[in-house]
Image (cartoon, rainbow, N blue to C red; front, side, top):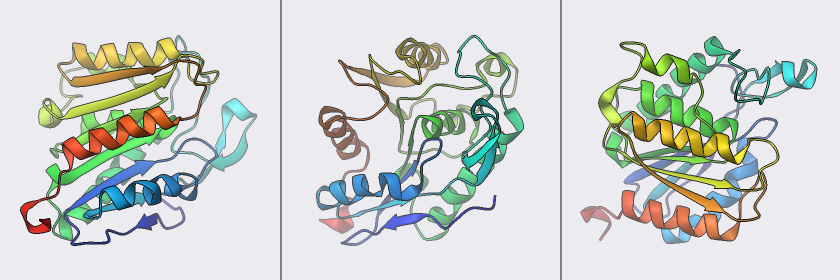
Length: 230
């Protein structure tokens, strides 16, 4: 996958855990890196990685080229036409990012994978497809793609069956409908996943201080300092 290098906020103490967070459509790793810098003082043992999506034509936007993890034809949850090949290509790319962290000595269960909007969709899909046990999954203002395929034998891997998920969504989201996000959480629960879904009243397709506080709490629970950091 051809894209700019990821934006990295390095651990300020001994690196023993990593958060990989994927941005939304049209954004960049820089767009979310401030969140990593905000959280860094609370998690000095954590490295935050914010990858950059490649620039691709987006059908929904008249074919205009912009950073995207996959093409989007429609944001209608009833429209089943999805860029499955683009999505699966991104899943492979995310796996390479996870493998890179593991090769540097970070245990996979000390890695949290997350994203916002389109990035959230990729984090959730990767959590179903990967055979690597992760420490946690974060999905903000997103949805679960390729839902129909989840009933296909062999499509879903059980590696993250017991991995905690944190999903957050604004009830005034004007891009990814709130009900779509909630139904995605319900679907993941049907698949046996351990999902906590939080609603943020009045929040649109963005984030808010309360959600960031909930995210920090989730990271504190899933990526506590290891003994070597104490």
